Length: 136
Image (cartoon, rainbow, N blue to C red):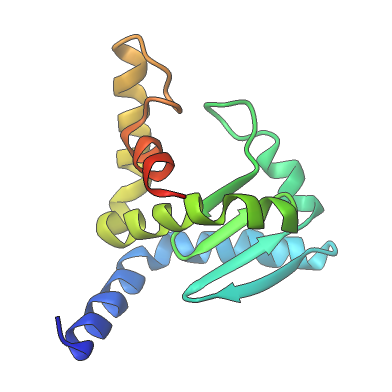
């Protein structure tokens, strides 16, 4: 693949996931206003802080989360959680690039489907399984 084609595909993935990125950045800005911090890692904005810690402790499906990806943004409870979960969350970024606006509905539809079949909606969700399998 040529460098130009690669750049075009990356750009399209960023645009396709942009509404979810905007939500993540909005939550990140609220966190910044309450003493949180952010950093740019490649094409991903990472946010952490007390507000996000409070929010993520109430995440559905698993009774809380250390971090969560929204498009090209990752929100986390702490910098430690960002470092610890980065590889996993970056797999989700790639999933957002493929699924775009449809990622969140597809994620929750998958969670419902596996739950309906008697499995765990988080651990058996195909999106999570891919992220755990591909993350080192």
